[in-house]
Length: 177
Image 1 (spheres, rainbow, N blue to C red):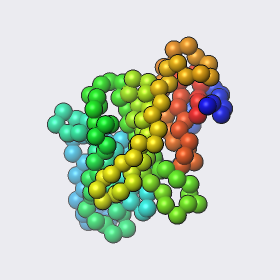
Image 2: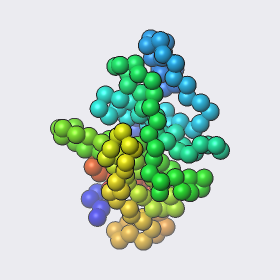
Image 3: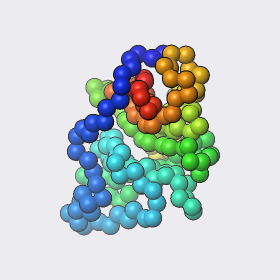
Image 4: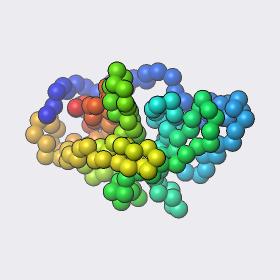
């Protein structure tokens, strides 16, 4: 169900974590945190339960995974596996994944949410068990042919999760939720 629709305008909100800021963070803590030669989404970090998380997308020798780093304790980084179903087809150029916070700020528990877009199909996963990297698929929706889209053959250009529970996606001309 579409709750609102308007033309897309680009806007940058809030401070951005950059590779340079992480390098200075590493020097302050005196710890080593190697990024490696993988496709890390520096522009989409999340902080969940006091821990910074980044998603690494596929490289030739590696599967996608999420890396976490506890800034307060200075612990070494931890790797979280992504759901098995999301790893299939990650080599496809239409595949994109990002992580977000799931749950309202007022709620006691907040979770990591993984959104995958591949061939115009969204899959939303919630991390239910941090220690064992156990995920629960919350939503799967095909955007082509959805009743209410104002475009005949929409080309998706981006997506995000807002307010901890609302999937918002953009086409070349409109934004939908």
